[in-house]
Image: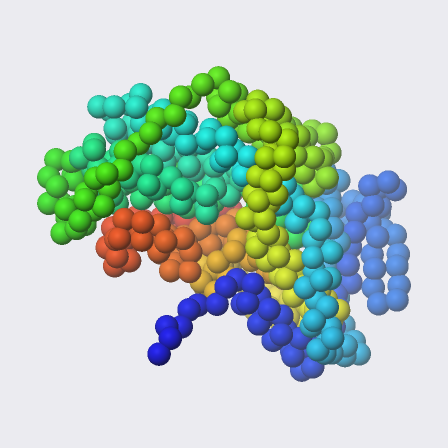
Length: 497
């Protein structure tokens, strides 16, 4: 009997799209009135079924409409999309979406999400250029050589650097390449293979969980929620620092125990097998020359420029995408990649993220079906009834737990964002909290389950050292429980600060 495999994110989203299309035949159609801030005229535009009116852009207007959001969120540009006005839901004539609509939905979604998709593809090309240049490998290998005899510093630096990659550009799948490089280093330092795997995987997990400027989660989710991605950035940065500190302390404690007494290792029974597996492996320390240093500097500068542009110059996807394209070209010149080779590598790098791009389009297509079928607001209406009287702190915790559960079935952060955020984000309005709370719940919920989810990257990561999933669970569960308790406490307290 052929072993069954869990379906891919794309297949799951197509199944969801089909189910949503079927729902449009049974769920009553309906719609909320919407409110949009027009900066040109400094007024609110209220749109209902077949009617439009202009209203003064002030706090009194918002209060009269039961919209519990400060006026500054609109005038500053934090909320730039139309929001649903509470208590304005009306049932409408049904618009069921049949087979043709279902087949068109991924294409409509791809067209609708074109700006985000192009950003993803260009970043994929940039990462491909960086990987080909050897800058990533050389930087980490140089650290390994420099810190010989002080390997505990290597644990801290690798975890922090990988987390930095996770929080800025979703450094996840790319980490697979570093396991063969770093496992021999940690074995030579009298640690076990779990320490190496954990430094990379947990660093990446914490970084993506607490994404600050990650275009694959924070920016996409904030865009779908109708807020600027800088909203809530400070809180996420603090969360990144705190969870990273907790994780590093946990890693250092385990690593020191193993170094002092190898029998304390969770994979001690596999010690000989793992050492023989990597016995012939050697860490090749590529010369960390000025070209590779400059390439890493330019790579980092791309994100700094993006932050400055979006925060101060009014940039958005077009300008951000251009920044990364220019960065890739500059790095190509610095590392002397031939023009034809550059194009080949860049296209391949973009191709590596084509799956992510398709996920974004397919997921956006689900939203298109719900919108065209006029059931999005219906589902939101009934969900709002459940959450409208909910305690703020309970709302934040329940939303975090909800996203953790959903992430088992939809492990793609970008797919999750564009699929759920248009529905989930407005729920924050009904309980009187900022929509960034829902964005945070999405990130933290997905990030927490990622530590143990078999649909994520942990299984292929463990397979490199032939370590069983059960051994990983034994290692990581205490840290997982600590982070769950800490995260839920932070989410609860954050709505009152």
